[in-house]
Length: 214
Ligand code: AMP
Image (tube, rainbow, N blue to C red; front, side, top):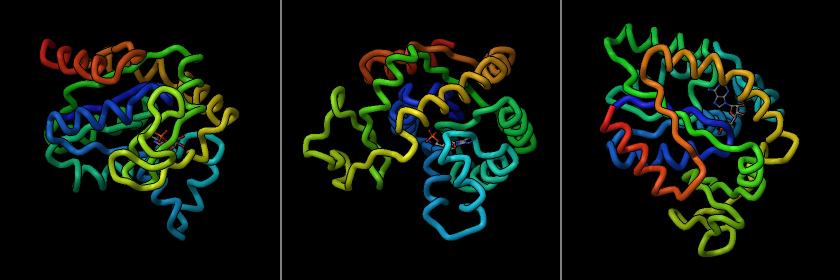
């Protein structure tokens, strides 16, 4: 199964990608996680991407596509669910070409929809595990032990870009790209739109039902 998840920041892409990765036994690959790990290194690439990430902007397409080229040769070679890629139609077109060159194709692009006000509320109370990336929320999904990940026991942190001004910028960036990106996959006939507001398991069941029925 080859899947990508579209959706605004806070729409639950990471959580749904993780569940789909377990269900289909495919790796969940988050470009955001990869870039955050690069930021921890002392490298020219880290210096280049830091400014974009700190303001909630997008890392340039050329860098993202080069990264994906490498990922497709390694962890994604036998199936994948991408979380946070592609973010622009240029990335989607380059990805399509990359897949085509390897005689592969994307099965579905899953598009999670949600109201801006709900997104903001979700992101403002969000805690992320610094080790496994699991997500919690101070109100909607508190961890069993304060600031400790239920899944792996590591520390939970507030992401640097989960502040109100950066969240608002990330939403603006998302909306700017959304129409062209979703149209691209709609035209290909592989876009699946889902309401992302609701219980995690219900949304996941809905996605799986739709994947089986199309
Ligand atoms: P995320 O964890 O998906 O919210 O991504 C965090 C940040 O990483 C984004 O705000 C961007 O700065 C960068 N990023 C992640 N994925 C991409 C992508 N596909 N294209 C450009 N920038 C990205």
